[in-house]
Image 1 (cartoon, each protein chain N blue to C red):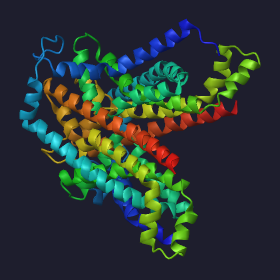
Image 2: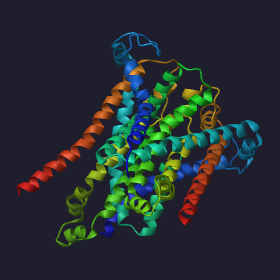
Image 3: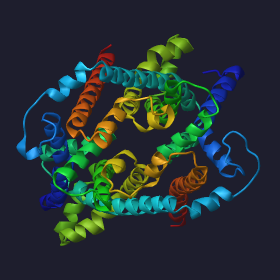
Image 4: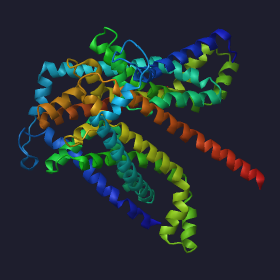
Length: 268
Length: 259
């Protein structure tokens, strides 16, 4: 395939335009988070006042607190339950496994709002009043399927004989699990946990319908805001920075490890 | 090894309570008379006749389908060339581009939509146009990634073979690349159309109060009107439309395979 100059100029230009479109709102919030005035059209000068405002805004800080608290608990519980369930399911009869996986897929395939009102109806009709607990239970419920969907394919690749061999050699099931199975699937468990955390952190719809009065996460706080508040730009900027750092870490660490492993192998 | 199966018991109990039971709840509420509890279930189709008999609700349904359809079409039109061009880059640049496209997907959708609200305040646009921009923005990366994945799975030798057999660039694209990327387009459609139909955040934040989609209708009936029966019926109708359209897209995919 011969590439002429004009064509590659065109394709590169197109991709740059797409990236500009995708990064436009992100650039916008970062820029205006440093704006001196409240204006959304004119950048009048550099200031950190919106960051200061953010840390003085009680409701905004509460929403950050609830978001992180719920995301951490939901991630820990859903990663453990999801991994344990996936290992169990991988040894189940195919028919049981398929039925459970179909049901497991429901929250992934269903529109969020359907999952949300279903959970809300469940809580209310069983006389469980909406609270922080119902919010956390709901988050665990929609996070587990993602953990299972991430861990399951990795389990399928495992050689069953290795665990069998461990059992034959006198390991008890607990040892076979922790010394043989878990070490082989832990990268998948980690990425499942990462997906769960981000799903929980970013959720709006399900939280909106299942949280008790006065409990707002970041999304709910933004949704319920009456007027445009530039402090949100400061918060968004901080989140952009954290997400970028995490993605860099996640993508760089494996490649560093790989290089290290290569070196070690060469040393032997 | 079989004893490991017991490890899935807690989760099977969990999905019974938190996934299956809520779905049954929606069904029960959708088919029962408003105001009574689930225990004294009284079957009715009123909630459905109310929805289909009212032109206002039908208009909302039609608007939701139209904007979700337009969003999907534009995501394909903008996303397909992008995915194709990315797959022609060097391996290193491809990884970089995919990473750059994935990064904004990890950032809270509410915050990105809120940023668009600020940007779009500077322009005098119709509500529907604003909502449309917000939706295309939000879903475009998913479409690009799906199509790119299916193109990069393709065997590159096929292109060489097509050229060797005398096909030009355009013909090779139409006869080789495009048909082989259909699965990517299909999964892109499911990732865009489905959440677009049910979206209620984007219309609320960008469209203002007067722009109502079916998701907003569900919210209104659940949280403002307190009519859970009618709200359940609407969400059941929406879920059925989504299942039907996914089924149709999959069918389309199978027909494309046969050709």
